[in-house]
Amino acid sequence: MAIALATLLKEGTKKSHTMAENTGFVSCFLKGVVEKTSYRKLVTDLYFVYGAMEEEMAKLKDHPVVGPIVFDQLNRKQSLALDLTYYYGENWDNEVQPSKSARTYMARIRQVAAQEPELLVAHAYTRYMGDLSGGQILKTIAQKALNLGDRDGVNFYNFDTITDEKAFKGMYRSTMDNLPIDQATADRIVEEANHAFGLNMQVFKELEGNLILAIGKTLFGFLTRRQCAGSTEGGAPATAA
Picture 1: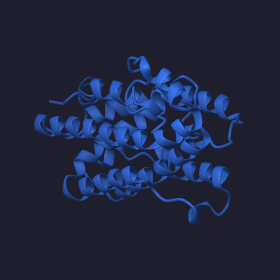
Picture 2 (picture 1 turned 30 degrees about the vertical axis):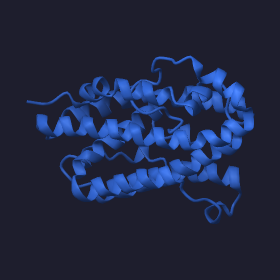
Picture 3 (picture 1 turned 30 degrees about the horizontal axis):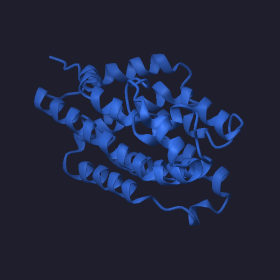
Picture 4 (picture 1 turned 90 degrees about the horizontal axis):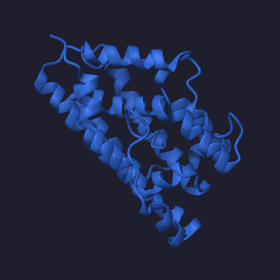
């Protein structure tokens, strides 16, 4: 009998999802307060995290559990490279390094790929469903806050080869629900998804320093005082992605 993994993940990560959106960095972002230095550092971290995840998933395209959810249309690494070119110039690859929290995130992805590859499903769900669900809202916020054009530094949010994002998400969930897993594996995937949210939150927290320097502790405290319920359905906020 098929296991409704997509529903289990959505329900099983609600608390983590809300916690991620209530980190200081994301809370400020959702209120339209975006600071360029911290944002481009986020883009840098995402480039390395997605690079690790997409490299490992490509190696596992024939794996019975991972393979069915490998969709080239979702790959973000090249889009993030375009954004890094905008923020750092053509020589960006000699100027950027992942943060400590991003390196921890990458290490977990590679560890999972080597030891329990089926758990990569959790990382793919957490990132890509967030990108597709909240990405356009977050793109608009970033454009307004940083005075960006449609392609200036926001390629990350553009899924050019997906014509109907709602239909694609439905297909993706259906694919997840038909993966050849048992309940014990599904439970481990949900647990790993919550861990992935925690890794995202560490990335956000590490970015708060630059934001506080830019806007001041008083304004930062005011903006983050009131918490909100999760609003980017599905996965991690697309600011993390």
